[in-house]
Length: 101
Image 1 (cartoon, helix red, strand yellow):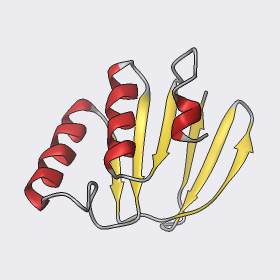
Image 2 (cartoon, rainbow, N blue to C red):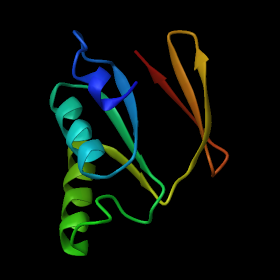
Image 3 (cartoon, rainbow, N blue to C red):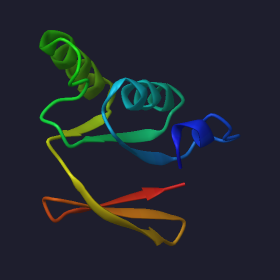
């Protein structure tokens, strides 16, 4: 689902993985968390908001952690597949993340 498609959803997912920890990904992670979704934010670069000031990036990452948003910086997505009522995402550590709608 793209960020444009996400704007038209009518119910909040139970859990969601957002791929990309830039400004848009971070904003959606925060908003969906506020609405009660279990959020994982995946960023391939070593930090979220990589184009922003490092102190700002660290502050937001700490805030996300306190709010229960799982931030996986320095993590690459290797693939995904549909699984039951959700999706499984394979990351470069070899782990599978399961997210249900």
